[in-house]
Image 1 (cartoon, rainbow, N blue to C red):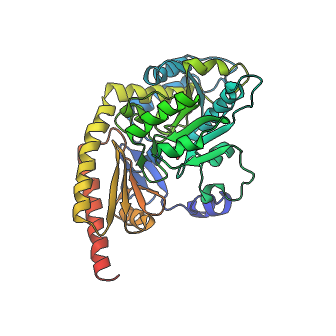
Image 2: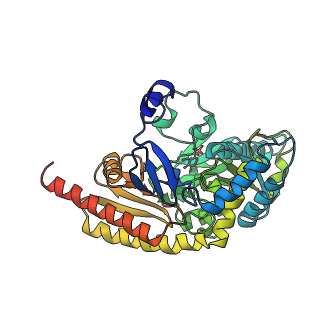
Image 3: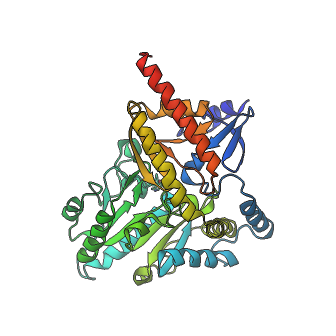
Length: 406
Ligand SMILES: Cc1ncc(COP(=O)(O)O)c(C=O)c1O
């Protein structure tokens, strides 16, 4: 049986099946398929391969750990977890970190944080607060908590009854959030930049207003930085650009540079809400995953990759913006920051993704009409140039075909 037959017969069909491409190996910003074709990978495992594929210093560090100690469970300690937690606290601010294995799990932790906070919010004798105000067009993952916070039929259909208490307000509309908060509200929970929703950034003044509103109403401000965090937008966390501090942060994707790891951070004044036994994970924070996290962050720091993603990302954004000007029949808008960029199209995104793939460039769709450009943070200037040429050429072909009525 070939790979496609194996997928079709034995893998549950929750993804496109068989897969559009079977990848055999990767190096840097490139991957090769099983037929030996090379692709520039600007999908990066959905904003995850921070250091590209099989980065030498990363694989050296993780291989060393692989040969030393793989798994302990949290019944025992090891030397990596505390170091990685400290690194994250250095960036997030005073507080503590819990490690898990994915973005959805990180968000589950934040939802549990909101419940613990809400139990006490109105006093021991008062009504427990359990509501969480999320944004329309959000995506927070596929667990029951994550999908209950994700108001999309595609994600929620078939899974009733959902977790109660999720309320939705328009993203970037402070009045809508103010209206949605009541005595039973424990938290506001949003993505700093909506990724799956099509690369929509929270405006700095919206985040600042939300911070003040949450403080005024005594509700937590929880930020999902699973996709936009870990340097991808030019600062370690995207919310830093609005100069605010949340009460909790969910992170995952880019943290392990492709190795599964998730984490949530809880601000210092709330860490007492968690106690022995209130949360746990067998695999979370294992030696190997934490080595991957440390290797990622050390590379970001040593190679100045966060600044590079800000500066080079801005230059690339400007080029895309100019391209919008000369492909007005194809491009509706260019959005994003750093290396989390989105192009809203006037043609179907899946068609564009397939056309770009056929020319050797991998990008991610977001919904039906946005493509996401997500290079690794150590992408080379010549690779950005190559990607731009493929985009330009493909857009030109689409426009020519449209004019010819094909
Ligand atoms: C903002 C955000 N939150 C949560 C998730 C879920 O992460 P995971 O797929 O690792 O569970 C994603 C995944 O795309 C995401 O983009």
